[in-house]
Amino acid sequence: MTSDLLSALGMVLTATLVALTGLALLAAWQMRRPVRGGSILFPDPVATAFLFDGDRLIDATPAARSLLPAGEDSRARAGLLLRLGPVFPGLARQIEDLPISGNVLLKSAPDVQPQVVMQGEHVGGLTRLTLIANAPDNPTARKTTIEAHEITQDGAAHVALQHELLGQREILARSPVLMWREAADGQVIWANHAYLIRATALLPDGADLSWPLPVLFPKTDPTGRHPARIKLQMQSGAEWFELTRVPAGDNVLHYAVSANSAVRAETALREFMQTLTKTFADLPIGLAIFDRSRILQLFNPALADLTALAPDFLISRPTLSAVLDAMRAKAMIPEPKDYRSWRKQVMRVEEEASSGLFEETWSLPGGQTYRVIGRPHPNGALAFMFEDISTEMTRTRRYRADLELGQSVIDAVEEAVAVFSQGGQLVMSNLAYAQLWRHDPAVMLSDAGIGTLCAWWRLHSAPSLLWDDATDFVASLGERTPWEGEVRLLDGRLIGCKFRPLTGGATLITFRAKVATVGVLRLERSLMTA
Image 1 (tube, rainbow, N blue to C red):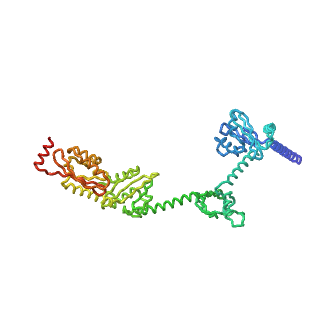
Image 2 (image 1 turned 30 degrees about the vertical axis):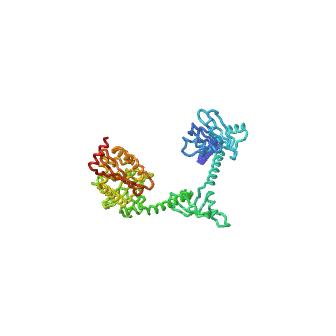
Image 3 (image 1 turned 60 degrees about the vertical axis):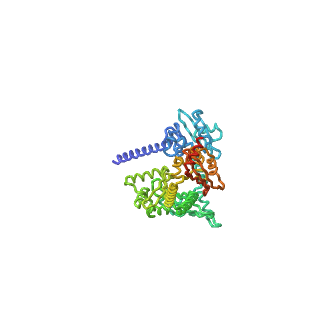
């Protein structure tokens, strides 16, 4: 029994030793097995290599993918050339010529340390690019090194990333935009050169910039992403910045863009608007400016006075239709026959004003007379001007009435009257003149000069030198002496003519028919027939 137990225990121990020995051999074999990469086209996963079909990325090693933007396989080659262009001068041209040359070796720029070499190959329509770091200067040795892979090739990606990092640091150092990072407690844990310059300028005399960095701007709304306008008072004067906050994990990134130009422009615009407002406030003409949506944006006090609209109503920014409706309710618009025609009139006002054609004279029920002008402005805006011309219209009507009265008076005069201006133009005649000379000068008033009328008079009278003297008298500019003369019409009537100077260089000519005795008429008639 004891021997059986010992025999079974020996067999168990033997089997255990055999299993352990097998596991040890398997582990040793796996440890000696070479590491395989994730790409079947690149057996060495440590290398920095790319495979392109045109601009599209076919495959790349992990070290190579770290140089490419994520999700840009369709434009990966363009992105790679943009990233490695500063490292390898002439890279884009060499890659474009690669289908012709078939193979190219490019050395990095002299300022890139350590030196990097790029090998380009074009095989079977595909482009293969490989980066090698620390390559020797001998081309033969470099080629051997490339083929043998005797160097640590992940250093090439490190050099490219380091070169890009230096470029980004230079960009941040030379950027005019203030950039800094704040921790959760509000302390500045990083800042660029522009921020440090302002921080140093605000230090007291003799003080040095120390850690933590001073906070230049007050804390703004942590939830706001829209730029906030903040003033930084420097010794040379105030500087304005547009501050933008971007959360980045537990920290917050800040960007302060100079807003001095915007502040100056806004200040100039505000001062200009104040000047315009003061000017508009003193204008006797009512001004209303509507935007492209026909909402009232600007008006002056004269508008409220002329339209009888309450300032509170105008301040509420009503629409153009609402303003016209309110004016109609206060009888400040000529009342149409019906509401439909009124609405059509409102639409016509807007359309004609938009095209710059609207200009009307409104005779209001209250007796006032307004001149209303609509003019388009840039960006679809519309401006209306309301001018009270009641006094002007009254004066015009009175002047017109005086002219009509004066015309009625001279029409009642029995003598034929013709009045000429200083320039020899007929300005007035009466009914007796039209009956005597058988024509109405009003019909040809634009051409009724002394020369034209003298020709008419000469045509309808016997030959006489009086008309030449009349022309000279009317056209004379010096002092003139009244004189008289006679002419005989073709029907035998004898006409007495009187020429009188008037104020302002005008001339008055009157014609009166003379009554002759029978004997005189017979004598004159016989002389004319002889």
